Length: 238
Image 1 (spheres, rainbow, N blue to C red):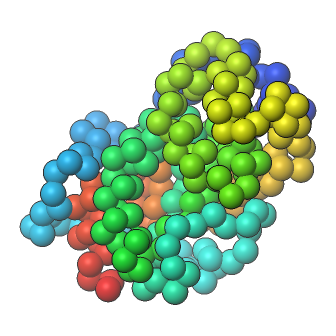
Image 2: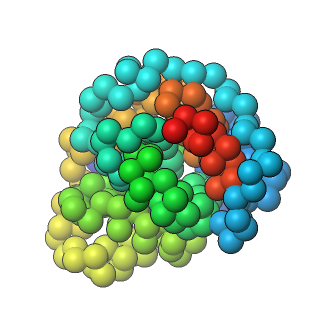
């Protein structure tokens, strides 16, 4: 397992962790996610009805999955949508970034914005840089998803550099943070503990060990999927 960094060290560790540790952090078990070795989803390609739905890697109790956790849920879409997708992601995972940049926009326009799907996004950080990204998003309050989007889009500019602290500070300033509010956020021990608790619950209660991992109405799908694969799973549930 990826070692958990001791308390009070997230802010300062951002300048000390080798960049090579981060962008390979889609799994902490030594096993890559389902999508490793296959081409990432191409959102520019239209969904094909002939695509076979991926097989679920198991199921969990959907009621337990949706119980309140350590932090308030961050979600997109109607709460009463017939299909609920729970995504566990790490901010330093390139597969997660690719999903958010390419597949999510089409998933949103086709299913989320039309009231068919609710997407719940949960934190599953593998390293202090991912923890810091999630903490900044949480400190952004109503700008949580815009901050997540920016951090994923600019992932290589802060997750893969030697001094992530300065890189994240520049991004945070563009989002309205001052240096003082930036440092206050990343030294908030309560918030750090809560972000870690979200991850621990995902691992302990639902078997999450790689990112991205999606639960679709309780069925678990580890690894990146194309919009066609999402459609093949979602459409029969509508």
